[in-house]
Length: 282
Image (cartoon, rainbow, N blue to C red; front, side, top):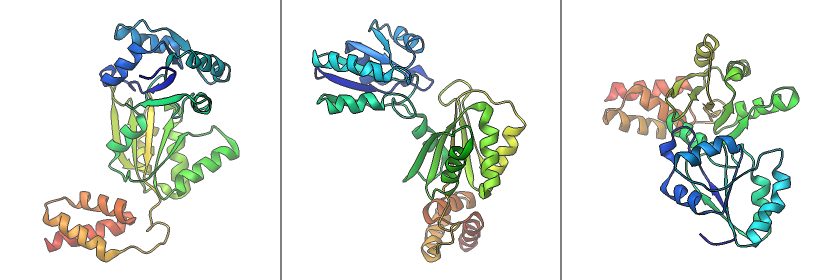
């Protein structure tokens, strides 16, 4: 590690075994670790036997910490930034610090690792070639309405965070916004003991979670508004060719339909109709 460097270190989102070897080496070798919650992060450092000094850096004191970090870097120190879980600056503090450090001519080095965003995308089965991450929904007012509209109308897969007590309201808002038949995945407590990844339509998941008390950290993945949903033409000939190939390869109707929806932007009914036609020709 080069002196005068800020290292952005991704930490586990639940399972402590997910801390990479490179992250371990980094946290052991830096002069100081800036953490969103020092009490929470102290548990992680103690687990691995580190005695690296901890300093807080959160949304309320980030601006005040910037000069301190820049002074350390100017002295040639190596500083690490971590958040409570996952990748720092992704819906977490640190963006102002990173901007200031880069602007001051110091190196900023990412140490990649766990992220609830990419973990949820991987488990969703929805198209991840392009996606929109919107963080947490605003609580009320026009800002919330605009956020909901952006989520519903995005042509790309959408990933959001939500508090457990507000999950039902989020899904209900999407149902009311004509997204009830979109595919959706609710990921709860990713990488933890009580991990749950539940697939279904928005309406089905709304019904499921309305009847249950929800706990833990929530990441939700919503199917994008497809070309078929927005009235754009679908290349049916190309889609049928893909469906036929998959059917001959032994893939199920559901698997075929899911790929057609993600790759060609077909509606649910369009995709299943083509998938059935392919299965009959097999």
